[in-house]
Amino acid sequence: MIDVEPRALLMRPDLAEAALEGIVSARAYRPTEAFQTAGPVADVHDDDGNRISQLLFGEAFDSLLIEQGRHWGRCRRDGVVGWVDAGAVHHGVMVPTHRVTGPGGVLPLNALVDPSQDAGGDVALMPLGQFEDDLATVAERLVGLPHALGGRSEQGMDCAAMVQACLIACGRAGPRYTDGQAELGRTVAADDLRRGDLVLWLHPTGGPGWTGHSAIAMDADTVIHASGRAGEVCRQPLAEVDANQRAEGFDALIFRRL
Image 1 (cartoon, rainbow, N blue to C red):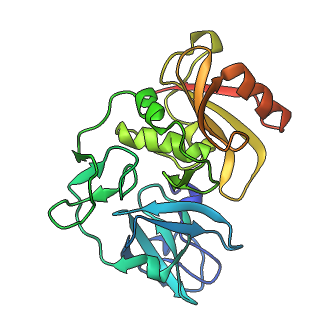
Image 2 (tube, one colour):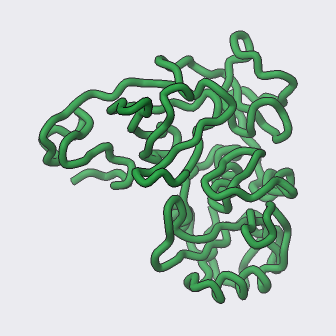
């Protein structure tokens, strides 16, 4: 048995990572090679060319295959598997010492840096191992940023990426998609909802790079979320967001407390 998210496994019928030899069936096995994001962000695509996520500056990418100018591998920070342009990453991984703590700089929120080596510009930094203490406070700083499916940065982020950014900033596990976030913490009742709780809607089918809708509670009646309908990260009444999501075929609300 493999106690890991199956979507994070690098395996296909013709090739799998060497760590899976004897566990999964493939015609060949190969070790991964470590790469790192060269610019502020690098897009991650699925086999059909849909953007499903992004790598942030300093994040590692474990490449199993390079083909037609693209790497196929896994984003080490959150386990997303996909394709990255070869020119968007460089070989080898530096050891970061700090994390970017706010939006609006040259490098995105939660980028990983060593300020003695990286020219990150005028960005607020926090040493690794130190974290924010309130998901909702981090979410409030993101209000007004544009919504973009598959995005994880200030240039555009989707709903699950917004929640992931807040989780990472607070030193929590940061699943990339709503279904993974729905497994964090414990379930709470609607009448017990409070600031900082996760507010989630799963979707029965989902789509490329998304499995539902994610938000963070500001209080019992209000959430912050990256809204495709509004085109930005915004604060809205929970009842309004719930009505919109249910009208679009999403499942019933899930509330999780960390």
